[in-house]
Picture (tube, rainbow, N blue to C red):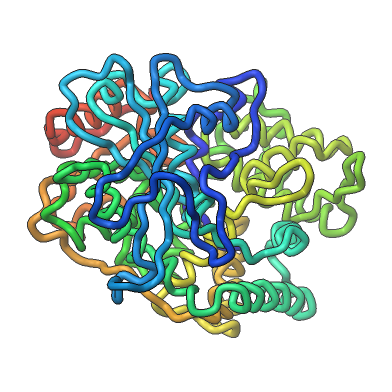
Length: 518
């Protein structure tokens, strides 16, 4: 499966907000050329023309947040920033959310949820519902417009869509650790087919979905919303976008919060191994919780054994749901991955595995489909299409299939549950037919202080990345949350207080600040 750093699962869900939750409906429909068009499109360097769009939160979660207004626009950006004059463009979709109680406005706060492939438009809507539902504190929404954007290739912004629903099912459902050569060859063939389809459909556009291109789009957004300097909140992969922006436009930075750090100095292999290590550690924390909390964990005291056994049994005889869908080893593994993004997911995983042992796969599919963004009708959003396009465009060097096969065996020994699957996850980019456009990895010379937030139990962006990113940027300051799950803000009063003070007053957290889990 493609590497996915983050979709902000720690934020409030649509079901939390509304009685009825709907699918995301595009604000800008794609035309035949693949660019998103809609009313109010502004050229790069010009001011955006906003229009009311209460339909976006209504169709996404059933209603808008009380006291908030919603407006949408788009900005036309060059498809290739290396040759911007007179060439074709993409329209990048934006939403601006403003509190009716706003006062002493500072400017806009641009937000990105990560992925790559996550919708910033959707995330901004979720964040608008306030602290009690896991959104932004009123101290922030009273001072900033909240601006979300769908990066190029994502959702409403020239969406990349090149993987069929059937191939998505096959990819997620495949054996996460194909041991025999025949099994391995099947996974290789599937990945070849997927990448060839993307190459056929997107052709010369493939390298244009890179992080470096998207970071340049962010500066066009900054200009379009009328801000002299950028205030930004980026989660997970969003930290890579923010770090790239800081290196390209250090003089345009006001404040950057990078939560759930990616280390840009890690190569493709090191980044994959880092995730294997992070998920293995997070799963061990889950297993220890199970052992200590038997009343909430029906698969304790040996949760690791229960999960490993469930995957092994599924390889021989997978449980089927009422519609005949098989809970294969791959789907169980995806459910495990999904559950580790938040500590609240631990109990859901324990109950899902326990029910699976009794022949009920519903809980497994709920967790897995949440991660895969698979809808009840079996269709998918373009999350993983975009994820694949961005990750592979970014990767400067990808190991050949033979090396990936070696790493599969080596990492299995080091990280028993996650090592081999994370090695296999590198296969798509080994066959990627597009050119590469790697992001920079260096100091943000001339930028003001940047806050880099890390969570000690983070599975997807391990805590070790935090200091590495801060050090690379040169102006980075580490803020630590001693918690579980992926990313920290706005989890506790300590984290909220430190981040809010920085965003609003530019007060950098004191050196070495560590916020407790609760």
